[in-house]
Structure formats: structure tokens, C-alpha cells
Length: 590
Image 1 (cartoon, rainbow, N blue to C red):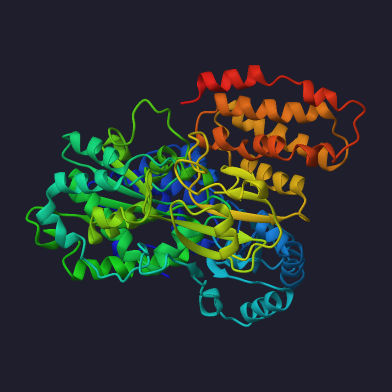
Image 2 (image 1 turned 180 degrees about the vertical axis):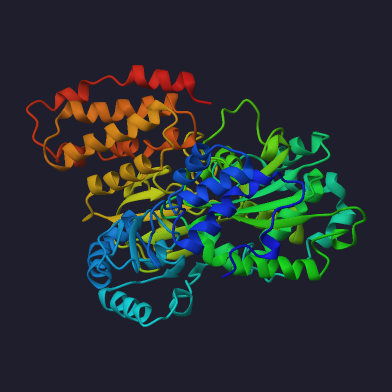
């Protein structure tokens, strides 16, 4: 895999600092760490202090200041991996490499580290070795992999090709995302539509952003179009870091052209000339596929000068690879990262459509949204509206994993019930279902007749449901699941605001007390109260949604929690009045 290919070079309009993330990656990949000398050289090159370069390098999980081994191994420790045998896999890696977790072996050959979800939840246990994927691991397979690496094989030579596992699409050719695709078919319609026509098609189809907020796409694009800056950007948020979610991985692997085409359409509509795909570091193995597709678009005249034969419409796309920071899924944190800074969310005085990348008008949408735009223009808005239900037209991609027979990708028409999806995936004794990752919505099997739509299951504004189902049966330990979620958020918090930094730590400690049989009713009421405080006062979406699973589990699985400890007076919990915390949350929430 190339470290920085021709397509991946910076645009001439970008300041030198925007190359910093890529330059740090170069050092990491070439030397297996970022040395003091590298820090000094980059500081001199960019005329920044060494402390500032150090601050950027230390922010990202995949950048190491000490040698991380000739072969760097990251084992996924998400809850789904834990339930599929993570402990055994970890033990085998440690035995075969001679490295303890989060360290290197004495010879410096192997570095062994834990990392949260790597986007392979349907093929757990999984790991990345030198940023190439290895799936469906067991002790024997791990042993064989390490033996081959010791014999001189490269990770690229022996890695797995992750399966797309597209398990279900709407019947009778009603699929949208996985219909036959031809490069440029949607672009060829732009001349007849003009920018106003594209906006109108999106408005008629009621296309909502698929990153979780479900903001109307046409409104975002129209707002960006209204600003008259000569330079604008289109950014594809491919930082799919929510545990349990892998739909964007499948789209980028299966239909990369539809994503590129959606970005080009956005550029034409708002008057932008440059597009950037911010690809999560865990998907580094997809860079070559994306660059190959970009090259094919250039050769067909679908990128570059006069795109698609449209006079004076010039558009370029490059790929930027993130370095392991869940918070960069938040759009302003992503923009900071693209600018070569720490990926810390901005204070939102301005939306990105006005002041985004480099403080210029920027459209930020996720992978699924851009693919949906391409398909919508291919079929037309009225054909698109034939799918789904009123208020939620079209189809939605859902990542399904956990206790089910058929984990994978499900393209459903909006309006399908939870029960229908559980039946399709062969759910086994579903008890606790986490919708759209730890920051999403927790539901019980009693809610199986709710509809997956923007009017029901995905209607709450403070719950960012992007599209995944993690299914847990009645034999799973709910407290253990929540502890895994809490550890994830504690680790991934950028630490800028106190409610998120301290709240996640306190919640984790309360859950540990509960897990160890030391909790009382006051711990439960404090768990919920802290959750509301985080919602009300955190700076960005990470902190505001980190306690969703805690709050909802306490409300929907009340009997389960009471059974976890001995209490002399259960009425304490029943009598506790959450109204003050709820009122504070209602006052502060958007």
C-alpha cells in the first residue's frame, strides 16, 4: 500500500499545515513510531513549536512515540468481540508474539495493542495487523498468522478480504444502494437539472443526512450554496467509529463510485471545486480501492477539468486517513483534524456550511448520504418516493451483529418493524438491543413492534441513530455490556469539557460497584443523574449521547438492575425524583 500516492497529495489551495496528519502517518508507517527527531523536523518545517506537534501526535490512538513493533497488531476489544472470544484471542496473541498487551515483545518484532471497534463487527473476533484486516479469528488461526509473519510474510500477503455480508435488500428490485451501478450516470443528468434542479430533487425526495442527525440534505446544500466565497469544499465523513457499525465500510468496498459521484454532485450544486474523503484509520486497507476508483473517474472525465463535459465545473477528490479518534466523527472535530490539528470539537458559533474547512463554506455528509444522492438522481425523486413510508421515504442501511445467525448488512425500507428485522437476521433470544451503537437507543424485546423510521425509533433529537443493531440475548450480562460502553467513551473523550471527562469516569466507577455487588440504590440514582448532567452540559455530541444507554437501560430494565444487588429499602430508588436533572437537560438541549 502506498503511503502517500499521487491522488493523496494536498490540493494547491491548502496550507502546508493541512499535510501534518499525512506526514505523521508517514513517520509512523516508516519507523513504527514518531521519534523526537521527527517532531523537531516537523516543527521546523511548519514553523510551529515542538509542543504543538507533540500535542497533535499524542491525540491519535495509532500514533506511537515509542517503537510499536515491526508488526503492529491491534485487537478489537469491543463488546461484540468480547462475546465472541476476545479473551482467548488476546491470550493466544500474547503467547505467540511474546508481547504483553499494549507493549512490544523484547525483540521489537511485535507490538500488541487493544483498540475499540474496527468496523468488522459481523466477523468477530477481528484484528488489524500493520493495518490489514484479519477476521473470524480463533487460536489456531492466530498461531498460523504469527508463524507466517515470523517466516517473513507480510500482513498484506496473508490478510483476509472482509466479506461484505449483504444479507438482505428489498424484494422486487426495490433496492437503492445495491442496484446496478454505472460510473457517471447521475453526473450526466446535471446539465439538464442545474443546481436548482438538484436541490429540488433532494427536497422532493425528503433525503435526510444518514450520519444520525437526519438533517434535510437539501437545506444543508442550499445554505452552503448561498455563500459567495470563491472557494468551497465537500467533505465525506468516512470516520465510521461507532462500535457495531460497518455499513459505510461495505459501501466503500462495494460501491465506491456511488460515493465519489455523490460528492461530485454536491460540488456542482454548491459551487465547490475540491472534495476530501476523511477515511478512518481502521479502514486504511481501503485506500488503494478508493484511489483506483478516483483514477478511473479521472480517466473518464468525471473528475478534473470540465467534469462530465460541464464547462467550467472543475472538481478534484483526495483521501485523508484519520489516525484513531472516535470524536473525529463529529464534523467540527473532523475539520480540525483535516487542518492538521488535534481533533477537538469546535465551539459552534458557525456551522460548517458557512465556516468549515479552513474557515470556508463546507458541506460535510457521511458515506451513505453521498451514495443515496447518486442513486436518487439516477432513479429520480418520484421513483425514490415509492420506497419507504410517508415521512421516511427510501431505504436505510443497517449493520446487524451480535446474537443472530446472519450478521451483516441489511438494506431495509423505512417503516420495517424491529420484529421483522430480527426475524430476517435470525436473532437468537433477543433481550437487549442497542440501536446505532453505544450512543444510540437501547430497546428491549418488548419494543419489537416499533417501526424503524424517523417518526418512531429514530425520532429522538438527542439520540443519534446512524444505523446499526447490536443484539444481545437474555444470557448476556447487561452490566458488563454497559461497562464496555462506558470504558469506550471514557477512552474516546477528548477531555476538553469537564462533564464528559469526569462524567464518563464516574459512570464507569459506579458500574464497577454494581458489577462487584457493592452498589446500593443511591448508586443507581446517581448514575441516572450524572447521565442527565452530561446530556445538558457537554460540549459536543460525544458527551451528550455517551450516557444514552445508561439512562435508557435503567428505565427499561428496572427489574434487572434491582436484582443485581441486595437493598434494604427498594423504595429509595422508586421515590427518587429525577425532575431537577430532567428539567436542566430540557433547558439546555437543542
